[in-house]
Image 1: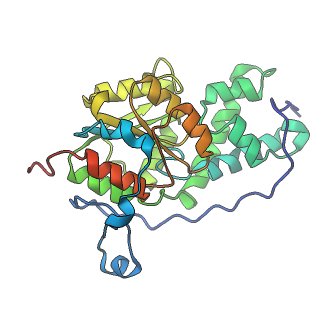
Image 2: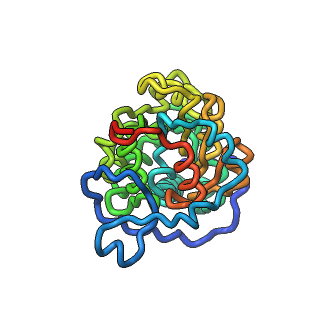
Length: 299
């Protein structure tokens, strides 16, 4: 049995986190031009209301975003940004690493996963987790891990709160968009399918299909080129320090989602604004300031 050692000290063991069941699949997007919060009564009536007083809350760091007006495009990471997929990746890594005797069979913890794995690229993981293993063999482990993720995802993947309302707003304002990820193409396409967003994104950029993956800017630069958008009127949603550094290096302001990673880590990486989810009042306030002058082709 293989017994590779962990590249960093392993924190004390913790119980495996529970993973939320998925939300019901969303229907087709409407042409609504506003986003906001659902009250219980409004959920029953299928209407969306905007709490304008809450939307006034903002952050001084959002100044870099307000300069983007009129907004032209939004780019999205997928893992941890569109959906809270990290618990599923953690489960897959934990199980398979234990099977091959990683760290003498002691299961990895969430802290170890966050510090050493989350947001990275599989080629880098293969080298850092298994420095003494043949690289092809290490990459086979990564392929097996991705296969396990795809097996688990259909029953567990959940959209980040407010995602589908934001997508309606984006469609209503005719904004360009692309999904940009370090995930393998099979994973990315499955996640978009499960989230009901396969048709929403006309462009999907995969890090491994570029000259360099995140944290290099290549994937985001490629996305801007493919959708014909200017970095002066575009911003990015990201949840990892690696992804934020990629966006900043591409010259595009980044909104960091604190889905799983600490806010300080995202700020230190260069995030212009931190939000909890896509219903965060700070985001709603910024969108109101930078939205295009036209909606659905009409002034």
